[in-house]
Amino acid sequence: MIVDRIENFAEYLTLGDRLARALDFLHRTDFAEMALGEHCLEGRDIMAIVNEYQLKPETEGRLEAHRNYIDIQYLVRGEERIGYAPLHGQPVLTPYDGQRDLIFYAGAARSMVRVEEGMFAIYYPHDLHMPGLGEPDDRVRKVVMKVRV
Image (cartoon, rainbow, N blue to C red; front, side):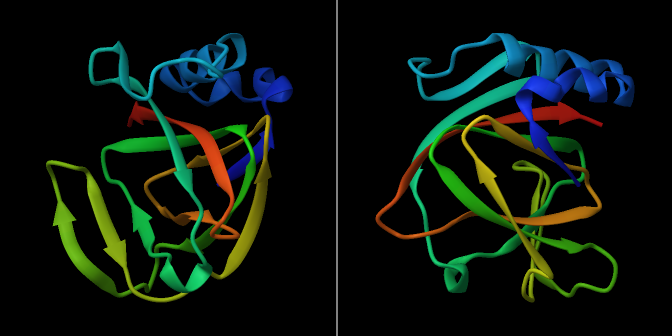
């Protein structure tokens, strides 16, 4: 897991070509008015998913992971807490869904990260994450970049 401000994106350009292109896209794009939904940048290799949603309490969160994609979660507006736990030793809650590249794990997050407007968090397949946590009345606008491993 990596957490930083978008203005520091250049520090991470050596992590791989696709990640570099996704971070550059996040840095140079104004997402304030971009249409909600999925935007394919390089076919299914790099996608941007623009979402707006209400936050939920930690008790309603679930740890998730992906096998084929790295997530870059970028807060356009608002702030949320994202839980984290290492993959090793976590029991599976629901089986892997290959269509959605999504698996849920039982258990609680081991730590919480507060991600504010203008910040991003990178989650690799071995990073369990529990996004969307906060005060239920609060809303966020967030972009999740999906970068094929």
